[in-house]
Image 1 (cartoon, one colour):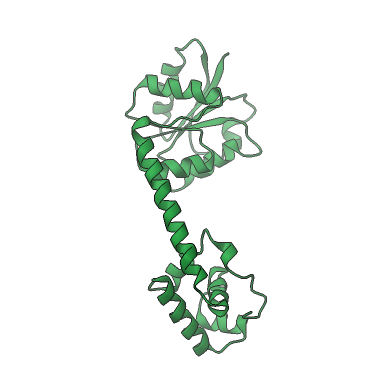
Image 2 (cartoon, one colour):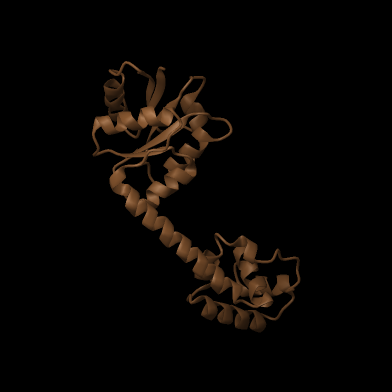
Length: 225
């Protein structure tokens, strides 16, 4: 089976050099080598692509957004994130964005070839040396989520209502007070109490704890209950 591969990179010369190496393989045909400056749908265009080797070192969340576009409803390609990083959080975020594999740039060409062939068969591929750190990161994340759930469960209904307003974008106590028909002093008291229970020092930190726990907060309808 011929595997059609698209190479993307921040630098065109890097993408082209990598494409030349992969194109030497009998079962791989590189259909393009491009700079990563366009949305995923335009990147592929009308090409038939099985695997995209994506530059995982794009700044910010650009790589994750592009990966999500490539594997989303409008795309059918399998994505390999090629990166110089071995940070477990970055690997996990790439997989969550839809990447089927993570390959480090300091690994051998053979490692990349194994990943290309593996994901083309529907497999998921990670460097064995990074797997332990990824598992430990996921376990730590799970433990943090459980702890946050316990902290949020200790809040009173009114404290949850105040926190829900903040999470929904109410930027200051006056706005929360107006929305919940409470006095500003009452809102201040609830805010101080909930921050103490959550072990945080600011409303922003409190809101951050709710990021993965929206179900613990009420949908505000103008009532503190």
